[in-house]
Structures are given as structure tokens and as C-alpha cells.
Image (cartoon, rainbow, N blue to C red; front, side, top):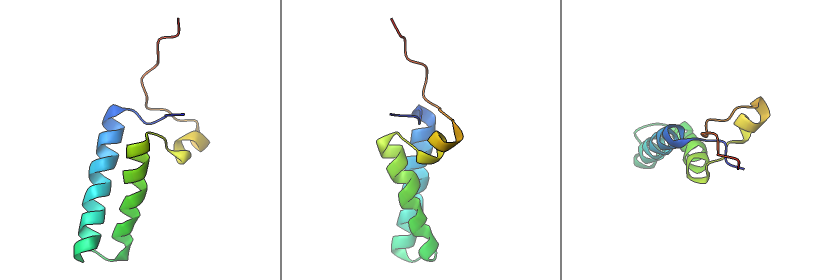
Length: 64
């Protein structure tokens, strides 16, 4: 079930790519690889932490 909305997804993907890119080039330490987490959650559209916290940034779907 998707729980990550549009702007949230874009920000996660951008931040993830920047962190992974910096880690790959050696500009930051090993911790930069943590960028894989927001990258994957942004690409998939689901965040396990949001589910645990009961959060959802997806727009409401029309139920008819």
C-alpha cells in the first residue's frame, strides 16, 4: 500500500540520489549510503516508518 505522496516522493528520490552520489565519489563517509533508504522508499512509494506512525502523504482517492 502506497503511503508516500508526490512531493514527498520527489524529495526522497532527490535526497537519496545526492547522498548515494556523494558516498560513491568519496565526498562523504560511509554514512552517505543511508541515502539508499529514501531513494527506495521514494521509488516504491511506501515507507514502513510512515505505516508504523500512522502517517500518509498520499492524496485521498475518490471512493465511488
